[in-house]
Image 1 (tube, each protein chain N blue to C red):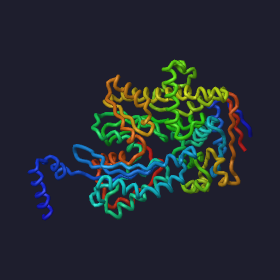
Image 2 (image 1 turned 135 degrees about the horizontal axis):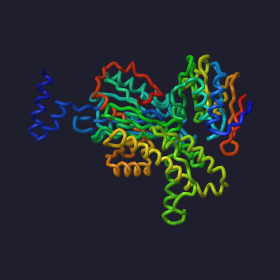
Image 3 (image 1 turned 180 degrees about the horizontal axis):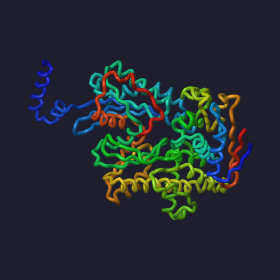
Image 4 (image 1 turned 120 degrees about the vertical axis):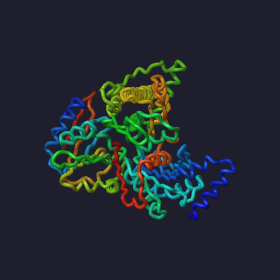
Length: 138
Length: 379
């Protein structure tokens, strides 16, 4: 599914709607350059899942975990500084990857390809002109 | 009883030597010796603090930095960091004790950071501190890393209430302090930390890691060029000041980084290279303007007497100058730790633990209860 977003706000809304289709246990692999809209997407996703907290970048601590509506958990991972998926084990990410109540969203997921599950959802962000972005969900 | 006579004997002897006041401190109010350990990110650090009722004296502050090891990766690699911590931790503690000329038996309190930070790094410090606590039979106090940064200001007395701007690679917050131990976070970044924005801009401009010093150095080049009349004075590029008028004390830096991306997209490689100092200058001005103005507004609203600054980004020279100028012009006292107490270090943790220990008694066997918490946010 290819979607064109014309603004950060629209990216937020797209993710907000997308979140409602998730039931738990999904692993979202986000790919795209700096400024491509990953932060906006995760914020929309969290809002759609009913997370009340402010979603801040997990770059420094690698993983942040939030609780949403109906006991759904959002595990937000930043793989930017990782070399392999094995390193995610060190930070305790396994626990969430295999949990049917948890939705895992991995930014810079191309760095940890070795742990992509078969049923992963790939979300690719492409910077078009100006504020325009192509979001490709497969 | 026997001990009493010995101390009394020493007391009289010292009195005779005219050092009465010094000893009065030790005996009646008690000097406290603290050993603190900090391993929350890429610095392995240990520090010994001698805390009397009238003055805090840092006896040692040993920091072993891994920054060169991680520079090749463009950021801290968690697994590498953890291995380096394991390698460094005991020699660093040993060095801290030797420099301070303190034997383990003389230590009254141990302090360690369980969070926030990198889980793999935090674990090395916490497990080491717990082992020492058990082996030496000393109480162990847990200190929040961000509160530690703030406490870097507490070597000198502070006039409260105070507002503290906490800026680092992982955090950007405004904290209201009623006294040394009572504080509340009143605002924070809603996306990236300011230090992270520096790192990301440095990456966009191919400047390398760590981003803060690199971007600042480029910005300084522009200032210098302007003085020589070459660079043209004001930057032609204009970046947004995100959330400047949002009416709260929150920040946002993700969009500022994207604005830098847009500005660079239209440039040729040659132009980008030439205008890198100008972009860095404008980015730094935008960041500093939002940070300083919001801090000042908070200080006015909370009727603060003092404005404090803390965290790794507080080592940024331009930010220090600007916040000091603005604070003093508006009648606030201003404090920022010296450079080596701004970046991650154990001395600030030792100072923090001293103030926390004044509020609560720490039992000898509490080491079993202390656990790492990489997402431990300030309340």
